[in-house]
Length: 388
Image 1 (cartoon, one colour):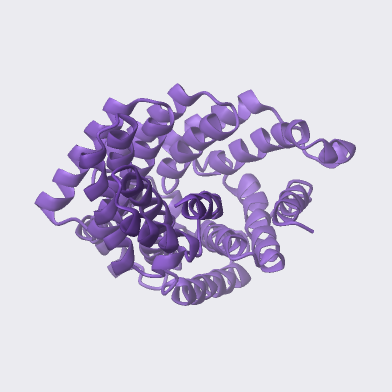
Image 2: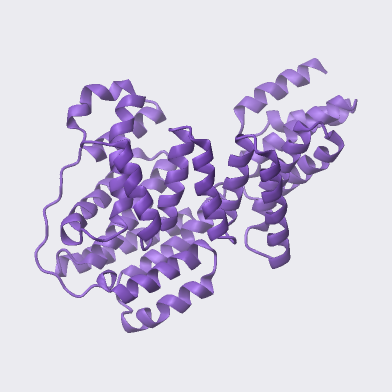
């Protein structure tokens, strides 16, 4: 079974999972406290903006008063998650993250054992297992991913009955409604099983995602991201997609991932001036303020800046940008597996070839061929090398 088929199977099983039974007794829970919700929302915004001091400023009074609440695992987990998202090739944090989320799930299960239906326990169980499901799927460990996702979905089912107004639930509801409607259309193999899927509605799904992007406590940025992703990848409404990515870029100006996402989407849409402006602003901001993940940001930004100059036939300006991007890739974890390691070397080879520097071109093409990424560029590099 292919990776795509396994992913579709996982999504299908999750969408057809039955509802969990509602719980009985409730005890005081932080996520029900309106004042805590405001502080948690501001803490989440600080976290997405790589402002650790801002996170602690918002949650410290609550954490000091309720040190044993499992909700603190989620803030710690999100901090670590963003280290992983910032450089997907650096897998050194994966084991620590898995251990942390398992501890979070265990802490939540202890609370739920004593107080079945406790909202904090349910939020932590839903979030921890959702994170684990996503990480396991990225690693190709589909059975582990499915098991974690089922735990998360069970917690979500209970949350719907215990705390139906909790705004973060709208993210899950929106994704479920959209994909239940979209998947059978996009993948005809699922049409035969459409009777077993929950009723879907793309328009309603997008509505709930928009609501989550406005009102969610922990998941506002995630909802905004999915709105951009869905519009870009599935609905091909690139203008709307870029507006969501731009919102993330401006709302979280210290977030390297959102900066890179906006530049790439602007380039793919052919908005080269917009992309160049975002590149220059981001490079200036990161250099001036010494923001985290400068090398990762520069690796990406210099590559796309090189692509823009290359497209405009400004080859002498493009070449050093590709060479700098390649050098940065070499300084970062798992260099040969990095996308820009191979792609920067390829374009450096093409320009060197065009300028008559055959030895230099061979050098760069061989880098591409021996890379562990960008198979399509390897094929093109091999062809170019054979023509020299």
